[in-house]
Length: 68
Image 1 (cartoon, rainbow, N blue to C red):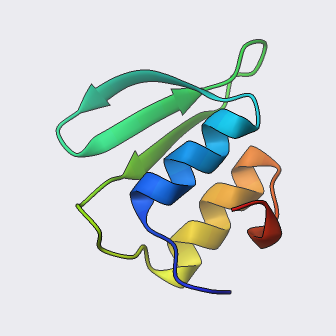
Image 2 (cartoon, rainbow, N blue to C red):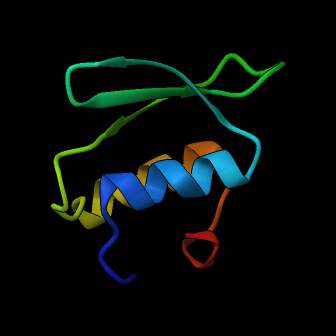
Image 3 (cartoon, one colour):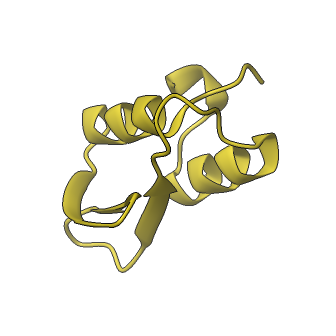
């Protein structure tokens, strides 16, 4: 998996039906209508997310690394 930033992941989530519920500090909380899942995406400038965290967030969102 190629490195992905928090900004890029948040944009990919919005393209796939997720919406930004709120921002608390540097974490963007994304929700999807009709779902109880909430994703907390850390947006720390242009720093890449660690691979395990990115894969975990993608799995929870029902996306694949190619969707980003």
